[in-house]
Length: 112
Length: 114
Image (cartoon, rainbow over all chains, first blue to last red; front, side):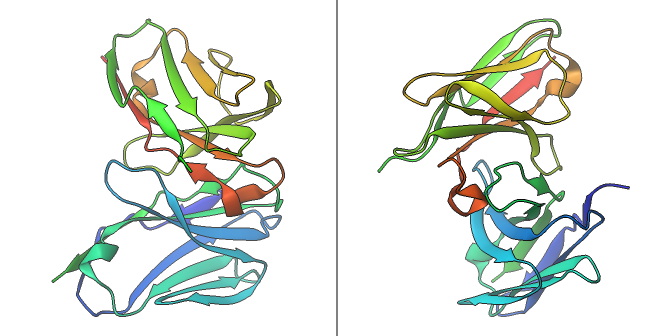
């Protein structure tokens, strides 16, 4: 079993839809959870960074962490064509660590 | 403020050859991490360099090696290339101990091994 599982999609939605992206993990030591966006031919860029369980909102993006279920989610409201990218979840056990464990990524296309 | 720059952007090698990839870290950052991203996969941690020394390594064989220079730039060297080494190699810089919150990735070097 991989440490982090993420459905690779692809996921295609109409503009304005609510998008839900998810990851599950097996390592209970993970405490810091991130979502990255990666456009084609670019490096990943950090979207959301959360610690432990709970919700975090930033504009149209909401990250949720449920440590009891080892499940994290990213919601995108009012999706835009510019949101079309691959979304990667990542996690680590130490806040100061740059050694992240990534999911496979979910390729999202938002159609105008 | 410049970001993380990597070179070359693309390269093609044959099995058994050696390759060197280069990374210039973001201004003010002193730590460099390297990741391998195979097609359709998430990035996998190779190793990290701080104060010119390796400081943490993922599950990669010794033929993957690196250097960090006094100006915090870095090189990734891969010897005896194998077909499975074909991937996007990402460099990420940060400030020691600041973690993923300030981790900045470059656009990567895409290596194809034939």
